[in-house]
Length: 494
Figure 1: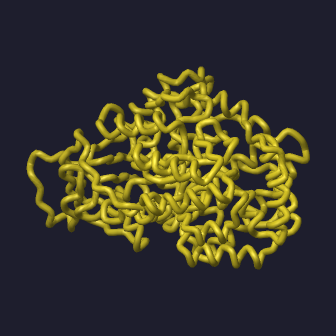
Figure 2 (figure 1 turned 90 degrees about the vertical axis):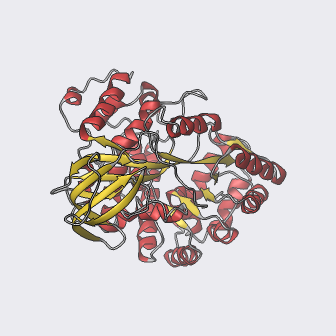
Figure 3 (figure 1 turned 60 degrees about the vertical axis):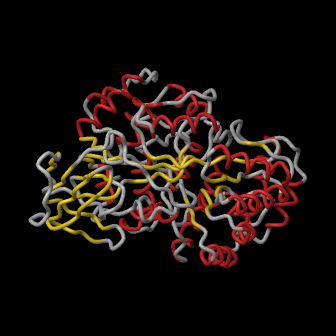
């Protein structure tokens, strides 16, 4: 994606963080005893603590015993949840990202006028929030979600891409029910106007075709279903099944699920490895959303998993959406189907790690029980449990997003000249990934939010919440403490 020069926040400060240990995520190493000087929204100096000089009027932060790392990116969010009316920006969700060390998000689809307006209000300093890279979500007709842009022809797809470019979107997100004709027209037109294409793999297109066409990123490892189909010897049979389905949202979804069931029975590990190798060779990035896939599977087993204290910070509309959970199972067959799909998902993830596929950390928040902001910590923990090292998980949320977005000269490392998007921790994340929850301060666009400031953001979100929270821990417990959705039943395998 094309690089962008970031201006400093209008609230940027001059800050010196003294005697801190820098977390070098690229090398997986620590640099102790450093002083970092921040001016005009950028890191101006990084050097040995005894050698760095700075003006007397800077804000001095004692970094002794603390760890300074690049700000985190959540590379798959929906900043406003389904169920909200177009234009209803939720300021508190943006604040929840910052409160959890997230200084950048990749917005993967909502009503266009809403997300662009939210970014404008963050950028002009009206509300605190992360940097936003925003995509336009394009699906077939009928679209699966009401906020997706529906296209029914190649001409429609090309026109939509041009319109998204004119409106100021950064990329195009392809969705599951695009026709072949519309998909290839969309990818080609996006190449012409200079917009990358990411998203799901449409059921009408093979994973290999998507990689060859130039889709640079795939979400959810292909949304569990499409990679399962790509990894089977039933791929063409499944496409025929879906093509013959009723042209309604419900008809296509049911056909896709039935096709995935067939693919699961005919899973071919060697074919899967071959497809994954090709994607790796072509440099296709994956945003696996591990924790969200685990949460969706858990919701199939336990239709209404208990909310935890983090629900105190969310609007009632999100909790209502969770209770209505469109991803939840209804029958024992649904439960077994979801468990089987998750088993294949784990197998695909393992193969991708073995083949060194490039990974980005994303949460898909706010799908049910995936808490905006907080969930990125859950995601990184889940990635480690799935086989990534702590430093690789950290890279997936810091230097890898910077590289993917074409912003490696701006972000992703604690280095002089880079934008001052940083997180100060009290623990070493290279030893334990859960240390990312131990946040002492966040610096966003050169503006520092102390622990007290972050707690104030959380308190305001809690006070603004209409969730009528009943959990007494809200006033006393650390909202960033570890949390895991577990599966009470398993489909076997590792």
